[in-house]
Image 1 (cartoon, rainbow, N blue to C red):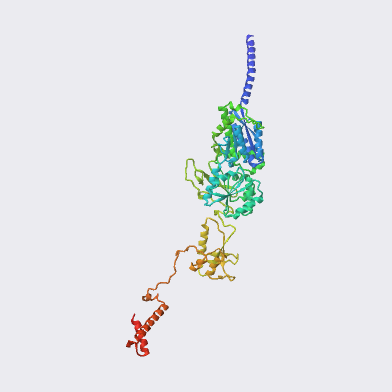
Image 2: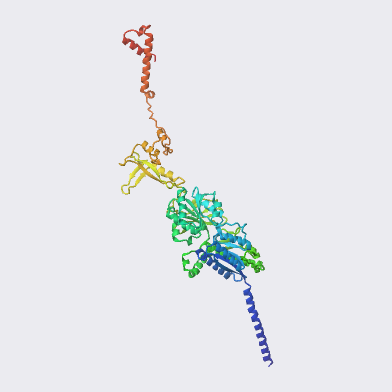
Length: 628
């Protein structure tokens, strides 16, 4: 009985303890769940754009990947997405709504518009980080906007890269075509005086007629190298119109900045077709296993949700947004660990703008962001003066897609291959380090950058059969073409090829209706004087009388400048060569005249000068020659 009583009592105690422990255990689990601090982050983008969809999906994957790897973290990002529709005013409005409704610790903006500058001002007022994925063109100062984080190279680096390309191909200068807005306009202060002496501004609202008008003006100029710095939408219309005007042909060179090249994957195929031969810049993302795996997972995940993404490829903004979320999540965890009391402060913006509460947590959060150091899928992640700057810039050539032809960095200039760390090289701007560039028109001949467009020079050539090695004119009976060959023509072509600018010319034979030469060489030279020809090429002799009508080039034969003289005869009578017939007659006349004068004086008093007339004449000649 005692044993049975003890057993019942023991069972009662155990059951009671178990019933007490179970709620405590359940309560402990609940405490762990509620201990996670939610970090609210605003995300503003154009959800209908291709880039907006890519960034949104990459941020979603970044949050999932980060917390699946760091399950023990006490913080978790909660992203509140808002659609800007690509409108700067709506961008600002959505930011104000987010600040009013949520305790935000950061705002990520995937827009390249003037609204980003206003958000930077707003971030300074509420003291929370404003992370701009696309605002590289704004180049806002970190001193003026200490709560702004930007991605991409600044305008100074962009200008240096452009200058390096212009110098690499030995172009004198280039013309800048830019969009007249806050995103593209800052490049002017950095490139003026370097290599872009002239510039043309296009408004975002420019019609096709206005774009064509500006392009026609550019065609009238002699420079044929253009640097384009504008939004992808305006650039698409620019290149389509340029192709219709024949400005995407041989002799032209087009350079695009990363504002355009970064978005090429989202451009219409017709636009890409019109951009064949363009050289552009884009940030270099090192290839890694992590990046390949992420790209495969991203494509697999999003193809199920959006079939149109099959036409898209992962771009640099999606990669950067992925790493940026990891940086934000890591910074949030460090703030929670080091300053747990700060995250519990309430910070909101009053929509009537009369009260703006600054965030103490935002200051600490920004400091932690600036100290972020890790290796992401984009490579080494490190903010410098509030900006994530790529270490290398790819130089790409658009031809049936875009292909990498080289790299550029501020330290080493143009490079053909990626340099190892701690490897130094003298700064280079040589085009020899670039892979073969296919220029507009499908040619590999480097554009001269300067062309006498609008006028083709008329080059007259003599029609002669005397020295075919020097100049030869042949009419092709089948094609009716005029074929001009010879040493003089070869020298002329080489001289034109060596010029820094492009010259267009046609050879015009100086011939009559029968195919014979239409006059003498003097007549041919007079054609230049009368402006029927711009120049004459051939076996033309430099004669003093011809200098009154034309100018001659320096002689290009081995002889150089020479003088034509008679051949020297080395016989014993050479001393008589200077004595011409007139001189002999004059000398004889003077001898006779001298004899007559002496005869006239001596005849009255000297018997030797008297006698018959024949004797007197003989005396005159004898006395004249005797005086020799």
